[in-house]
Image (cartoon, rainbow, N blue to C red; front, side, top):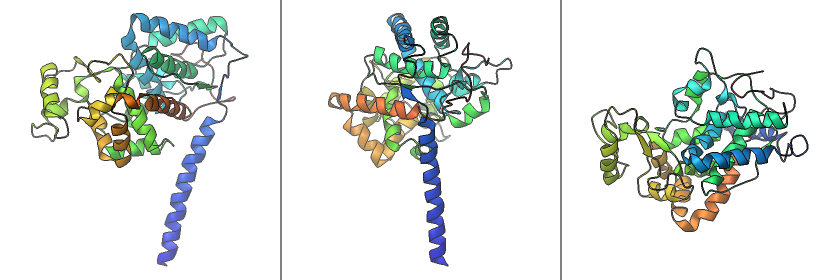
Length: 329
């Protein structure tokens, strides 16, 4: 009887793993590099040109544009639902984790240019994937070949975004569950966390680490004490407006300094510090904490972004190609 239970347990675990892998593989079907080569040959060049023009005058938009693709893919998959408006403010973009997203007007500008060039051909979901790549590249980061061929979804729900986006206070167990349940790997978790090398955050995302970590008016013991003092100079307990650089000194440059900060217990979010609580993620952090890890990280980041870009995609006749990214047709 005991052996039968063991076999049954193993069988159920195997079914779960295979289902996740099948889902991940199914997501990739229909995507290909150069999907618009014949239907809209200038599509990628149009995206790149507008992103480069934007980054030249507003480099601070690079991180939000990259994050927008991440926030899209982790809710319903990479199908552009984060872009949809709602008359009652009940779509994803109005969820608390998405209120800090910026650059929607840049996506709209790109879409207008694409509609002029090739009406009804390029999806908003693909615009997000391409804009994320080009934003990173414009901030001295890596570039990679983006698989395209996604179509746009018609549903966007504020509650789904609130429940499905991994919050900045998540521990390593929660982070691993969030990634593994989507068919992403622990390595993808460590690599994509490196995206925090660019951008800023409101104090509200980490203030509990400075003033009330366990509800007793204490600080987070995993955060470097000198760094805490420095952050307290910028963020007061009730501060809801101040922005802090996630990678102080180089928040507009895509590099490996994020890993150096995490290794020194200066990761801004609890989810950053959590990378040191798992042997695999910790090893990745430590091995990429110096400039010598740059080429490896850059290559890995492109691979992980492609992996993420395959999540829950709509292809073929599913979904639609929106004419305007903020509204269904």
